[in-house]
Image 1 (cartoon, one colour):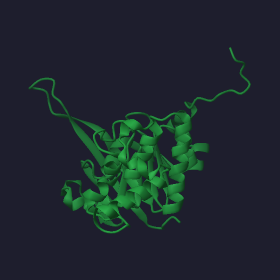
Image 2: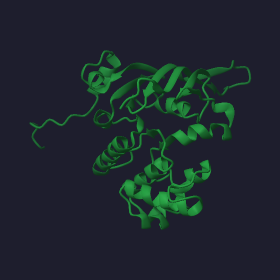
Image 3: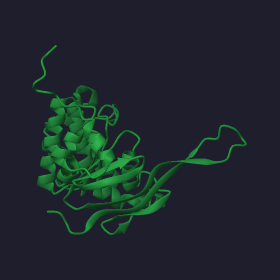
Length: 277
């Protein structure tokens, strides 16, 4: 059930980066990656963020998770201010309530670590025990449980990332992101590196985790079909600004902004009546 109050709330988020000077006499300049963004993410909802490359999607997500600090604006999680400059220890509460799945399952997993260590890493970092009890035994039991949840066998915990396919690696990444039972799961293009069949499997997995665990999802994706199938709400970004947002069906079927219409029109469509050459 979607809560009437936002779990995550952003107001006026702006991020500017300094542009290197070409000469000593050139005036200081900045490049704007995000400009005056407002966003509400309600508990229990699934929100998709779409837009072309360079539209500010990943910048927005990094700011929301305090992986970068905004130039201006405010962020609140469950009514508590998020301060990216507060330091790692002061942000433990936010790390406890959020999980992140990155784009590339090949580079997001440390090849020197076993799957069990990779998945258990958030538990160690946050000082959490597993449900099997305190210490290593409890964490090991929780790792085995979450591997089953994502469709992997518990004995795979002793293997290493190079022994798995791309789809299995992304399942491992999802297991790591949910092992500490976060309230918000964020995916930054989590399926773009996967083939169509595996993408459908991961999509089904995320939907099941959301229903079972009442997860709130925030999903960055260039694949509008993924957003259409998984998300209740959609946010459209262009040149660092949010240009349109609303219920997914309404935005995708009745876009109000010309940019959204052009974005949707750019999706390849297979003509069933076309003859094979």
